[in-house]
Length: 295
Image 1 (cartoon, rainbow, N blue to C red):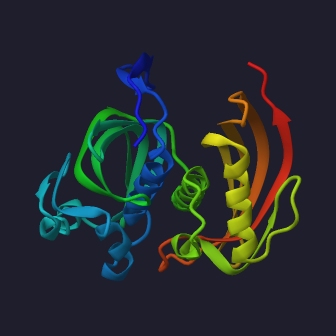
Image 2 (image 1 turned 120 degrees about the vertical axis):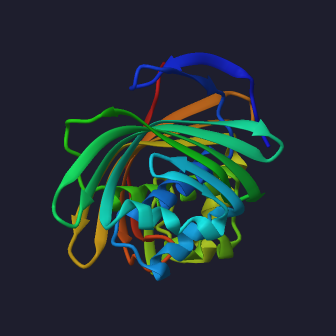
């Protein structure tokens, strides 16, 4: 585990301040976990579709929200009975993640939230989310505690966010895989389509697991301490349950001489999206251009 002390204090969108800690190598996996958990409310509820989110909860999970207190995994389903028949949209921002113990992390985020009921009425709020997560293995984190607070009523309409959060989940997961130099295919088979194509820069086209393994290993062989941050996501829903997502990728690492290398790539991903599967699956990745960043 890599951790740093507090660097500075930043102001969040709701007017408060949170400590901003140094980058932790677990951040992208934890963000992926957050986006997966929120998807439970973005489609009509079913027990079958909830299984992926239920796997994210510790047996003794505690969830405190405006709907009340949930104690224990078996009590979690009660939150739906209290809430009624609704679907929701979530737009996360200001996500901060920092270590709070051995193998445990706290995630804090601001969330634009819209809840739409079966009769067509809706309500909009800004939420503050704080969650404690425990590391089960290098790729899996589960929630031990979640606190959700309404901070103010929101008057701007949110968009349908399911596709955005579904895409964000798989993107952050894949960034964590590269950061941790994970080349065992069993850890990423769930997020790649049976047939996929990657068009990287300065490398041959990738169409199979062996080439993907070599690519990930090659990146980590050239640079150490890699940190990857996707930003400025733009989502388009395509016919046939596919999602196109374009975003900028900020990439930082150190070369063999110990010099910091910064770069910015333009990415376009196409995803196959079956809501009954753990992840939207990557069908293609195009890396459009790469530029050095001078700060």
